[in-house]
Image (cartoon, rainbow, N blue to C red; front, side):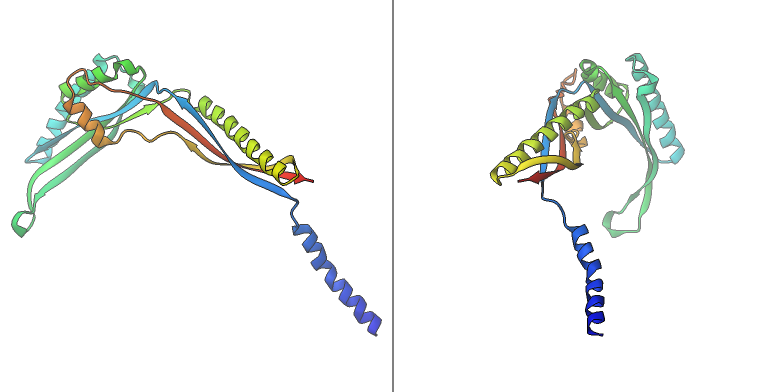
Length: 234
């Protein structure tokens, strides 16, 4: 009877031993690598538009349509292709007067119409901004510089990130008296480029500078981070 109980106890422990063996992880090192590639933007995306106000909704909309027609004509005259022009916002809002704590009083209607334009030749950007303003645009909302071969540049950054991760992993393994083994996993944890110029800065540059509006694309940094895990062996 006692021998039977001991046998049963041994059998009951077997699953726990097997589970411990299954969950035991091999020695490994996990590091983060970063790759950075500098690139000069060769394109830009501009969002510009017209805001009009009038006593009635119809009058505000009509005035806006007239002004936007001139804006589209200016884009056409600048040889901007149709595929690079898209309406990005159109809204009609009543405007109220809340002065002196009185009940809101309807004073006007406001129409906002914005168009997003891709500029493929940066040397034309400053002149185009001037042409839009001269055509009637009274809102220059944003300017984003872009790199046309960003995917290719990001791939370069990915390779650099892997190389950076390997360098660190080899350093850690050597310091621990071990050797780096095979790659167990690779995870990309970040990637992208610098933020665009903010709308407020764009408005100030466009309105205050003398024509042609000076615009500098500068240089962007495209970054990629990877988390890489290697096995290690003594």
